Structure formats: C-alpha cells, structure tokens
Image (cartoon, rainbow, N blue to C red; front, side, top):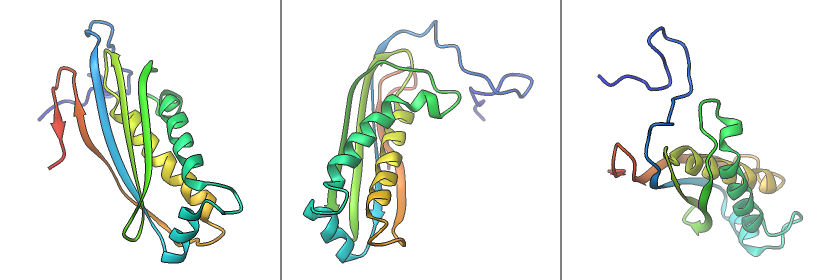
Length: 156
C-alpha cells in the first residue's frame, strides 16, 4: 500500500517538500459536466442571458481558479502556470467542461485542472440558476496527466 504524501510519520498534515525535485514539463486535463434542461441549455448557448455570455464568463472564471488553486487547497504548492485552457461546449443534456493546465515545475498540475473545471461548473450554475435551480454538476474527474516522477497517466 502506498503512503499518503501529505501525511507525515506521526499522522500530521504537511506540505510536501518539492525543493529536491527537478523541474519538468507537466500537464493535466480534467473534465466535468453541468446537466440541465433543454430550455436552460438553449439560454446558455444564446449568449443573451441577463448576465451576458455565460460560457465566456465561466471559461475566464476557470482560468482564474486554476491560478488560485494554492490559495484554495491547503497543501497545494503555488505554481507558475504556463498554460490554462478552459472550454465550455454544448453536449447532450447540458454543458461539457474541460481544462488543460501546463507548467514546467517540480510538481504536477492535476489540482489546478480539477479546480478550473469545478469553478467553471459553479460559475455556469450561478449564471443560469435563475432559469433552473435543479441543474446538476457531475463527473468532475482527472482525464490525463503527463510528466513528473510518476510518469504519464490516462483515465481508463
């Protein structure tokens, strides 16, 4: 069984020391979905909601969230991100959200990609809740990561 890196020998939470790790190119992709009624989806895609173009605003919120991940998740390291790309696309039953985050550093960007997707979904919900309160955020997950000591990984 592998040991949790954010827990020390005595069981206390700790931030992992990455000072000895080589800076390498690392990238992560995450995705999520906001399920909604067809009328709400039509409104979201029209760009004519009372709050403006909900997809554009949500994509910007996702980029901002990726850059703030270390402020939100206690044991995450602040990273200089070299790329954050967030996409909100129509899909059957709602809006599909994806985020691709890249850095050259000593630790990965999985949490930044997941945070970007989560906040993008929350922003979409916030902007569309006047039309539908029963929307469901679902399937937020890491899709793939590359680089680092543990190597490449892709969801099955």
